[in-house]
Length: 114
Length: 115
Image 1: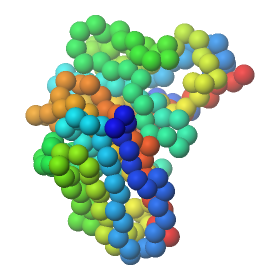
Image 2: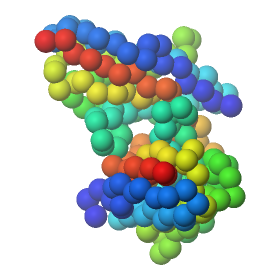
Image 3: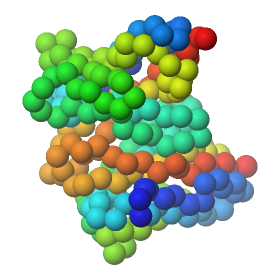
């Protein structure tokens, strides 16, 4: 598509429930990134995909967080047993693989855990 | 490890005045440097970037930034502020590692334009 699409745009969930956040990157962009934006922590890197592989998962905050990418396209970020501290805006971005092109970000999913 | 420092979490300028948003970075290798802008309830939009070559880079909406290696700085400027420039601005650095261009962001500067 023309841009990076994320769904849902807003998600309210009860503490302890699992949530899935979806990212549909720009067609042809092989690199895909997830970031988290929260008031206390700013913008934090979570995970990097190159194609369907995730060579850098160093930013995932705990084993409750996981992500996958299929067909070199759509990615899903899953948070299990959500906690209130997981409340944040989750941003997805895609880019051409290398060369400092910069990213195109989606509009994000605002997750609120109550 | 790379890091980014943005001086001033809030900056206010009058409409028509110069905009200067400061960014200093640390990096163990030649960095890629970026400025992103975020409007309310939106994702981040790339303003401009420095990779190699000319150290003065021009971006969208009349913004420009100059890479100064000796000062480890990448300050963002615009000669004349418009009301539509009110937003949050993020400086970021990337150290390419086998194609992984993950970004380290500064804490952001919220720009307010005074009519």
